[in-house]
Image 1 (cartoon, rainbow, N blue to C red):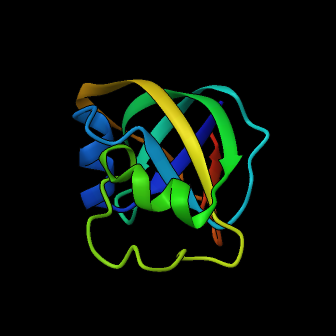
Image 2: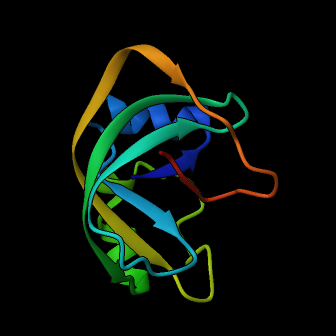
Length: 112
């Protein structure tokens, strides 16, 4: 299964089901259940389902702050190509699970 690496602030928003759009500079074809990894910790904190990925217009980005939780700096898109990875069913684990982090992994990790 894949593990998605996310910074702590955004990971907590996802795991509390406040954030259902993960904003990225690239599309993803990955669908279904993925682990959620807190950046810099080498631990899996939960899981979610990636339902879709859609390229955003500036209007999409500005009118859906409730989905991506970015409240400031929405005058422009953050990336030349900006995508919302649409997530659901986020679940926090009671205890984080350690994993072996491969050198150079910054977005995805393959978890055995």
